[in-house]
Length: 185
Image 1: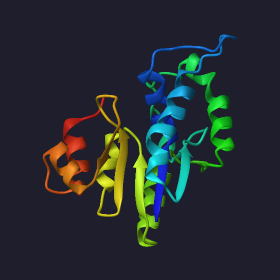
Image 2: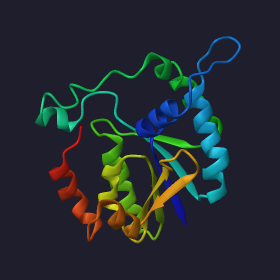
Image 3: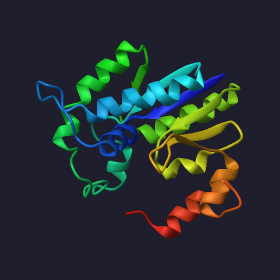
């Protein structure tokens, strides 16, 4: 069985910035919505998944804010033209009968990591749909990253070999050390 866990925030941002801004005839901006629909039609549907779940960041503070009050303090606010598309994107996802999960106090990354490891124990092959390189630390024989290709055409699937090659390391577990030494903007 195959399960696709989609990192909501990373994914919608990627779709928003991947396409030029365009609107419907009533001036509703829809580039992120269109990008997501196109991704589903051209890539994800072909994979014939058994399950697809969108995982959202909790709206309010999470446990990291309690550990460090400046957590994500420098992060820019979501662009208004993306914010205006959120309800349309949610409506599209509901119409496709895809579940959306949001766990109070946790970011999508935490939930995806937990679900991926639980699914692996249940015999699933899990695809974490995200452009976020941090997920590479979770890759195993049964947990992979499914990401829009860097060149904007198609998708890349990162298994163990791809992670080792991408980061020039011996094991996905070393991604934590690699990112710690390299830093993150």
